[in-house]
Image (tube, rainbow, N blue to C red; front, side):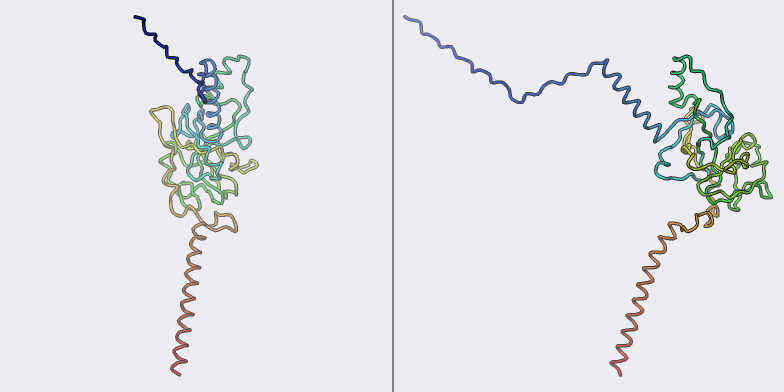
Length: 294
């Protein structure tokens, strides 16, 4: 018996896949690390330049609020949107000229030491050699009359005495220097919390700005103390700066009105117009009735 032949089935040729996705090759580690570091550096630089910057405090002029060696975070975001320094805020500002002593140029011969120092300065762990910044508390803003002292030895703002015992150095007098200044537009009057050891606005009244600091020199306001952890916390505005009477109409630039006054004027004007229209309508109705009765 002849064996039955078997036909081999031919497998259809596989057509090349269309639109097949190409596999993405992973970035090699030696390339990825520098890329991530570069991105992190750009982000950190952007944050430091425009948003928040850490500052190392080397002096004792703000004791006991801020001690030598403390680190604070400064909000640099607000000034970019036109926010102005407020009374009671702790602000960092550039030297207006002559407030800081001249310093010798730093030794940059050791590249490794210089690099490490630059990194520590960048994150606020060391003070900068070429950055001439100071930190003080805002006492007066444009238009304010700041005076020392009243009969009780207190600093007054627009005639209102400040209760400063919560933040000035214990046992320190509000000021041993008498002064009576009107803060000019575009400037602020600042004082350190350690009044006996702070070369602030009081000591520069004979300078070109009369002891005042241009608002354009303000870097930002310190809002939190981050180091050491045992003292970490917010740097708020003391309650004494919320007293009624501190803000006076005379402190506003000539020709301006408070926003609340402008807001209040609109409803009053509208209400007055409606009331006048109602009176006119009533008069017309009364006259019409009299004519019909006649």
